[in-house]
Image (cartoon, rainbow, N blue to C red; front, side, top):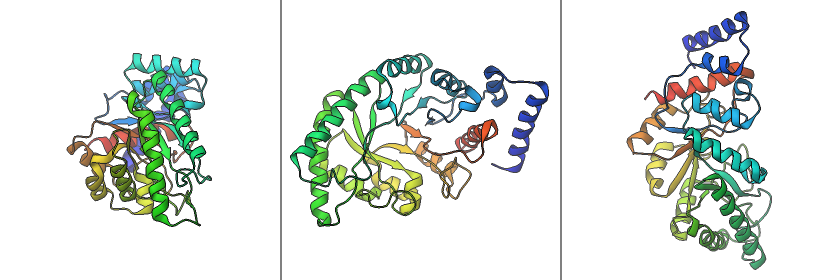
Length: 305
């Protein structure tokens, strides 16, 4: 965020405090309505809880008021069914598209890399549960992390096992239209020991699986850490990308806080005709309402390409 934006933002907050503004409605007015974002950025529960309150329905309403047209929730499968259904109804009313939820992400287990009938059945069951969740919440995408790699098995054998296990999972997803999005995660800062780390690796696997229910989740934070070259890799793998997530590097906070030029990235995606979702899977660089206001302003800045 530039200095002028910060001073304007701080002035709004200070003025609200002097006037005794404290209601959720006033907080939303403090941010200001400037219309819907050009791209479908998807915040998550908890991101705006200081401005909107802790109730998930209030957070959905707040996001829609600020111009967001999507929302994601990694932990959706763990929520009670009644709450899932309540969230889905409110999102439909508000016109919010449902983003990803996590279907499988066991970082410490060698699962997809194994040729084991019991493991394959477990994975099928996970995906069957994900399909049922997706139907309740009107979700099209679910995140899959293929787990840890095996230090005792040649890499190519592991790759073949991952492909075959994903084919079995895709067969469960295809009838409903649910799309598994495979997320490569960086091994340098956050997740050492995982099998899937790079977009080109995920691209090759998705081509081998050959299913509309198996695509890439390109998390640009992770890929900046792992390999950089973000826009060229988007172009090279674009036909297999099903979803994007973002966060700046270093720090994994909102855009404008690190080295990634997200205005250029978002412009490029818009020029390519991207109409899918862009998940805001990152932290916030400053605490409280001020930090949440800064997130919204950062996306406004980067969305003004």
